[in-house]
Image 1 (cartoon, rainbow, N blue to C red):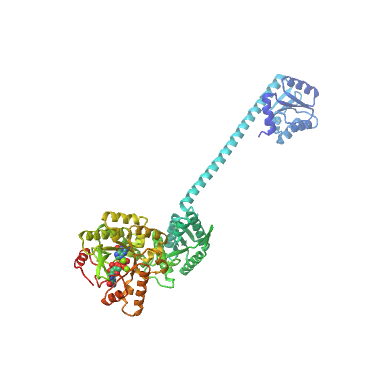
Image 2 (cartoon, rainbow, N blue to C red):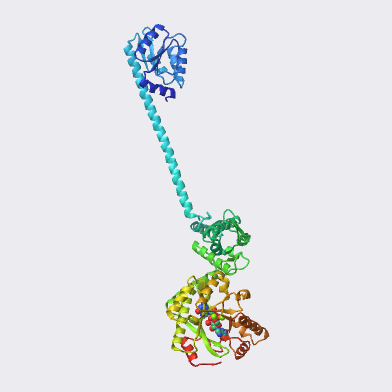
Length: 625
Ligand code: C2E
Ligand code: MG
Ligand code: MG
């Protein structure tokens, strides 16, 4: 190793001649040698004994030492050994000088650390040549060491760089993996990670037959409304808060994951007691009861929860028995069944939980099957419209019809709307079906108008589902149908139920205004069975109230229903509406309704709903009641 001082002096020696320390107890020798070296340009220091040599070398290490062997006190070998033993002076090349009459022990000289020797009397040229040799060796050694040092430093630096690179790459990989497995909003595990964990849980089951676990599917009720009304930023904050609250009810080993939107799933591993999971479900619902404070808004939300257990053992622990054997080997099925149970919970009312049972799956399959059949029915023209006459009670004549949908199934024959309309509404299929109904009904009545059959202008009442009312293109669709069928819009009456007003309170008024501006009439169907909130009745431009047939059918059984019907008739009239009674089956009912001043009637007494041809016959017979 080259120490700092020596490194510098060596560098200098390339520019200036080297620094040489002469050690000899004979002053004459010192003088002669010193003069010769100085003449050659060397910087020369002279000392006369060993201890001075040690001191001088220690204070300012020379580039080379010429060292006499025979000196009083410390001899040259001892001085040399001391210099070699000291780190600061160890590397200084030492050339021994010995007089001819002295016995030169060459082996001892090299053994003590000398690099060369000269014997007195000497020729100056030889001494200088030996000095130059040693200095050159020293210089080369020093530059080799410097090079080695630089190389070592470079290797070290590169190793550090590579280590940093590897670390960075590892970090990037970890980050990618994290992103692939987590939801960026809540930082919870996502569906992919959940699926992996479900696969592991199922493997555990295969290894240990009694291993139990549970999956919860959780959907936030009313979340969409928060998002729509307060915006996505609030919606996002709410989801994070919901995730935090849910997490606070769970053990560290339970895995809460976000599946997307307002849907979460929880995997409970190592479940001993199924009832414990039910307790957690109740706790989760309870935890969500307290309103959330999101910025300046107080937001209420709750969740519907579906629960599925992996094995019969856990189902057997429940307080109520579940029919059917349950076993899973597919993680998708676990999640599907938890989802199905969640939908059941939603149907039961918001903020509930439901445990999956196999019947639910069958029902879900049935629904799926029905949806497919409905799609095919529309494609294959299996729908037919029937028409039921509406009679003016004052004049006893047919003034219009209500269009009622029928499904003629190739295997099952006629299927009543009460069987398939709820499913069509749930799946959204009611929208294309409803459009078909409206178009067919308008076409039919326009044809009767053109043929001048029946009283003019014959009206057509078409039922409109809640789902259709929520469609943004409802009005353009109606315009389009009126345009293509060329039906006078004043002959069209739309029948809606109170649920339309309840479910679309914001949109309803604007749509009503649009309809009114086209002279399309509005009828409130099944009046009396819904919420019947009298407070809203006067605010909406309804033309007709349709008394539900449950009131009409008991009208002659006692005074109570008669009074209710009477109240509805006068309510309608007071609000400037006409009143229709549905489900008139007997002449007595008809008589009562006439007495009460009800405007129109509809029911089996006049005619059941019949196909277009039979309706035409009814019109042509010009019946009177
Ligand atoms: P709604 O609109 O209240 O239709 C009246 C229902 O009462 C019809 O049943 C009709 O056949 C029945 N009805 C009429 N008079 C009598 C009677 O004297 N006695 C008895 N017992 N029943 C009578 P339907 O055709 O089975 O329709 C049931 C419901 O299905 C309808 O109730 C309506 O809500 C819905 N619906 C029918 N067609 C359509 C449609 O094209 N679109 C939509 N969205 N819903 C429809
Ligand atoms: Mg109706
Ligand atoms: Mg009705």
